[in-house]
Length: 294
Image (cartoon, rainbow, N blue to C red; front, top):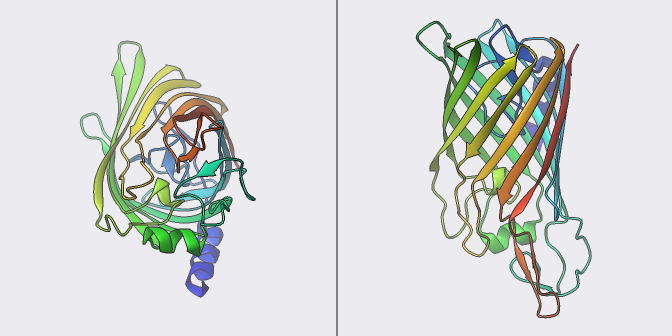
């Protein structure tokens, strides 16, 4: 805990966030706090100006929110901090629910879960006419999901993701197209909400992530993202994530993002015979983000 406080204080003192809009580049803040798309970190760095962002997602059964700070130093190193909050809305006993997400007394084990994410990214190659921007990054995460859940799953409460990302903006006729590819090494269950690793699978997984964005004009970008996810916990199937996004930059210091998020199964627990439906299955909904430079 002392290490976490030191890291958090350091990140808060140094971090600044991203609305990076420099003619042909546009980066917002991804859910774990780094410059990128909504769910994928990019090879681009933040603008260097102090910035805060707020993200909110409602999937129907759950809500997920993120508050982040982020920024870059000398256009070479980016530091970030994010607090992710995942809320099941199911704190006491829930009618008819059975399954791994409940303890033997029928109590919902997840409730509201916070994940602290401290990130660092180093750009090793600048974008030019032929080459993409390339960055190496890491995300140190700590979840406060219950010990009962972690012990039952054989998962850890801390973990670190490592990744390399490449981003290229290229002209397509009178428009511009952004392409990003990210390779991540991770043990995170649901980006760390449900801990890291498990008694079924405790090795790092290599996962691919991609973003495609089309500039409609200097202030508007539309596109899609796809993020592979590991599936470490046998009783709780984990699906890949995706989104279709619309980003609007009213000025160089502000961004507004709306997206249709497709998250698949998240900690799904089956209803009893009286329920007839499944809780946590096929999660999809609205993703909103607002951020501003200072």
